[in-house]
Every structure is written in structure tokens, then in C-alpha cells.
Image 1: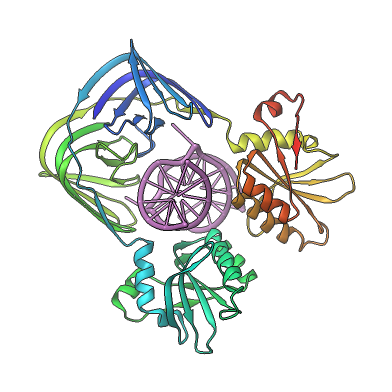
Image 2 (image 1 turned 90 degrees about the vertical axis):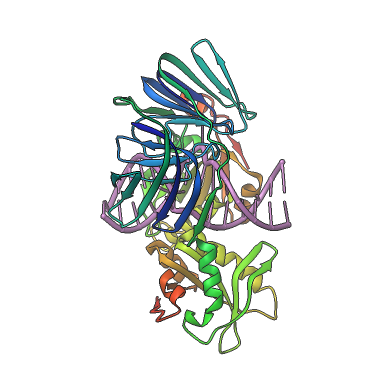
Length: 219
Length: 219
DNA sequence: GACTCTATCTCGGTA
DNA sequence: TACCGAGGTAGAGTC
């Protein structure tokens, strides 16, 4: 990794065009071939960048990165204040928990938490446009398609609508019910789900983890 | 801005939980209050980070960032290899062109470019599931909902389908026409739009800018 | 390689 | 402040 602090100007031409006037900035050149240009604001997002794969050429006072798509990032260095190369070695990588897949696994273990006497038929039930998160049967023997999200937005409801269309082509399943589950369902998604006859359920990760008092809220 | 290169371990607890084993990494502490932890891979995205607003406390060999939401990022420093503070000053900021909002503004000024004798009723016409990019009337007095995208994909067509459903509930507008405009409409989006009775128009930024020879292609 | 979907998405605009 | 949509979304997984 190479860190350069320099007064510079920058131009990017690609999917859009951008310009950066002269100022002191941090350039980060990583061993993966990426180049990022940071100001002292904007949190972790750089002002400009070029992701791998790209070729970075350095000529007199200028860094030019080009990628196979023909996008270019040109940095003109007016005054270099620091130029530091460090060896970081490999990174053991990030371990995560609490993402959507965990929600899905926890729910699969306790589908009865979804309000009525549901029984899990299968997790990741396949259709020809992709897998349904959970397929269940309710007490009346009706098939129930469940879509799980961390944050429930319209796009997720739409996904469920498409899956139901597919499932309803199967006479063993039709007519299905649709249940949209998330730790938070946004208002517009609720409106849209209702218009499509889809039930919404909000649930918290902790409730599922503890397996105690689901305290589900239904809409 | 402060740059620290150090062998460290990291823990984040917030919307999810993560751990990072011991390795040499770059820490970037910006004046906006953000903290980012970078490996030599992953392009511009850090392994872990904390965005403003947050409070960063440094105690013996440890950085602890906490934010008002109760999320925490703890960095334990095992060996500091570099520790550099630089003054970057203010940044003049990024100038962009060619984004969707520019397309929308340019089109609003020249809706007649969309083929027939259209008149703009309103840009960002509100519905209860979000604003329609452009609402127009055609020569026959029929309401026309226009969705503008830089790259036209199925999701954009779906957006327009939803808006039309909403608009058609209003007797002053029903039955509406739908027009999908983009600098490039992907083939799948064209097929889907056609199946929903939505017209597609491809247009280039330059044509709109010059206001000359729109050379629209209709499907 | 193309498509799909997730994301501590981030970011800007607006009500 | 919360909500919504755009993004040079990036990245992972799947087909």
C-alpha cells in the first residue's frame, strides 16, 4: 500500500464526468490495484477512485489510471507532501453476524412465530426466477411464501409478488399466501404490500435469537 | 487527517457484529470525525468504519469510537508502525455532470422532444408511493407519466408501472400513458415495458444539452 | 460472463 | 429528523 499526501487536481471520465480543483488530498494506492482520492470529509468514501482491474501509470507529476471499460482517472500532482509505502501483508478478513441470512435461518427454525400455525416446507424453495426464502403451509393447508429482509422496502415486496406469480402456476401450491417479514417495514412498502394482498410482519433479531416472546406486530 | 499504520485487532457492534483478527492495517481518522480501517484489498471500501457523528476516544493502545445510535468500533493497537497527522484544509468539492437529475431537468425543459405534442404539467409529481419524474399531457389531453433513468432496467419500468397504477386511481388523470426514457434501455427492460404497454425512448445527453436534433429512437 | 440480490450500503433531497 | 431514490453503487453468489 502506498500513501501519498499531495496538492493535486483530478479528472474522471467514465459513466459520468467529474473535476476536482486544486487542494491537498490523500491518495491511497492499494496492492489490489485500486486508487482512491480522499479529502478530510465524506467519511470513508473517496472523492474519486478507480477500482481494479485497472492500470496505473505514473509519469512526471501525474498518475493516470485506466480500466478496460475505457474510464480514466487522472491525478495531477502539484506538490507532494508525503509519500509512504508500507507492507501490510494479507488480512485474515472480516467475520460477520446478524445479516439477512442469519435472520432467515432463525426464522426457518421458528416459522410458528409468524402468527398462525405455520409449518416449514422448505427454506430456499426453488422457482425458475430464483429461490423463495421460506415456503410454508398454514393451518388450512394453504401454501405460504415468505420473503425475509433486514429492512423491508418496496423492491422486496416486488420480489415476493414475482415469486407468488410463479408458485401460483403450480396447482399443488395455488393459491398461495404471501408474508413479508423484516426487522423494519418502510411505510411505502406497507402500502404497496397491502395493495398486493401481502401480509407484513415486523420482528426483531433478539426475539428470534432468544426464542422468547416474539411480540410480533401485524399489519 | 490522521493516518496510522498498525498491527491491530478490531471489533464492531452495531447493526451487525464483526471481528477482525490481528494484522497490519491502515487507520484513517478524518476531521469530519470518521474512522476507517483499511486492508490492502477491497478497493476503496474499508474493512470496518464509523461514520460521523461519533466520538473517538483514545486510551492506552486502543481507539474506541461510539455513535449516538449506540454502535461501537473498538481498535486494539498491538504495534504502531506509522502515525502521521496532516492538514488537508477544505476541499473545493466534486463537480459532476451526466447524472440522472441532469437528464430529468433537461428533459423537463424540452418534453416536446419525447415525440408528440407533450406539455409539462409538473416535475416530481407526488403520489403516495413516491414522486413521478415528469407528469405531462399529450395533444389528446391524456395524462402521460414519464420515468427518467440514466440506464433503463426492469426495476425502472416496474417503478413506472406502480406510479401509473396510482395515477389511474385519480379520475382526473386516468387512463394515463407511460413513457420510459433513458440514455440506454436494456433489452430485457424493453421487452418488459412492451408487455406492460409502456413506450420506451432512448435519448443522449448531448442531444438534450445542445437542444439540437434529438434523434429519438422509438420502440 | 451475465444476472440477481445484499449492504453497517452511502449520499443527497425533501417533507 | 425520517423517509425516499440514485449510485461511477460494490460485492457475493448463482446459473
